[in-house]
Image (tube, rainbow, N blue to C red; front, top):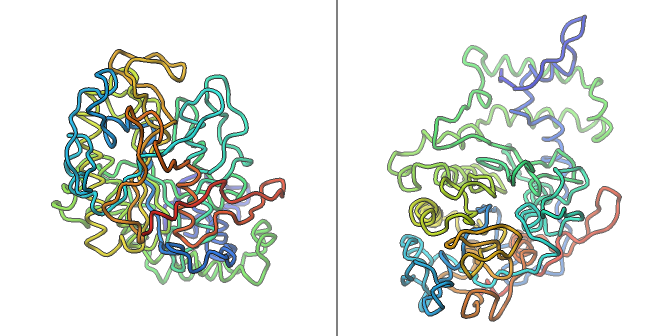
Length: 483
């Protein structure tokens, strides 16, 4: 059977029936039978849309969201301004890319050579309400809605069941996989600013059944897969016997019956059984199955190996994989964080850019070679950029003379796959990368574009926890990405 983490539930008469469910191998590392029920059967396909047949609509089957939490400096990575004043242009020099006339940072040479597979958006922009710190910006970027309550610091309260769902949760409901696989996986760490963990990264009012499968381990180290495998001494035949036993105790699962009805329960057990035995999740997360050369290609660090695991999960049939930059959003820039208030150029040159450059270029090239990029939309973006002027305060934070503060008014994103134009720059910033010069793209528009690519109408009506009608996202898809 499987080893399932969690507290064992016993009464004075022995194990409870729910405990029999646990030891009977239908749980999966926190993945309960109701999770599978919602993912596999309760999920309803998105309704027919007037967008059917529109350019790019429904061009994607899967999503990889590379979320660079912490706010990378667009001007020092994707949008250099060599002719700007010294206190704006910074220390880095621009280099040519495969996009004619488009230059990026000298510390991104691999991506410069692989931008012919992607579109570089230089006009991401929004105006926040009040102070703009990471939590509120992350929430908006991933849910498509601004937060209801923002504290004076710009932080939010911890996740609640009333939150708007993160994008992957909507996708796992509206575009559930047909096979026995995990529909939505988040790795290798949660979204986090200070003590606020997971805000903008949960299913919110959709219910916990649509939460991501959270693979919070470091893929650059040995990943523990025991809970995804049958014990060697327990053959599949014995698990099948337990499966038949569990079918006989359905009467105790009142919550499941209420949600699903008696007729569906046996089918859910069958699908849970299939998921356990298929081994797809276990195999996808086992990077030992990759060659050392491939692992080196992505970079033998947490970010690179997370991207490699994302590719493997997409191959296995997962619909939405979210790779979070492996750091607390407002962490130490000298270690792994993009939050470069205290130091900007040293950390970017020596730590962050080399990891981003190798990992993201390898992902695009590898997926392209395998044919996966044809049906997978890949988005790499943070919650905002960094202030064009060095050493100034724009969000109430203090900054060193070479530090850059938060800047949502203009930043960059990379989008690739699913028919998105290859080797194109979309939008342009002004002379100091302070604001879009043309074709601004709101974060909600970028999220709407992801839904659109999946064949989901971004304006479709959903119901929140109060049964109030809402749009899936308050944004318009950027259809000009498909030319």
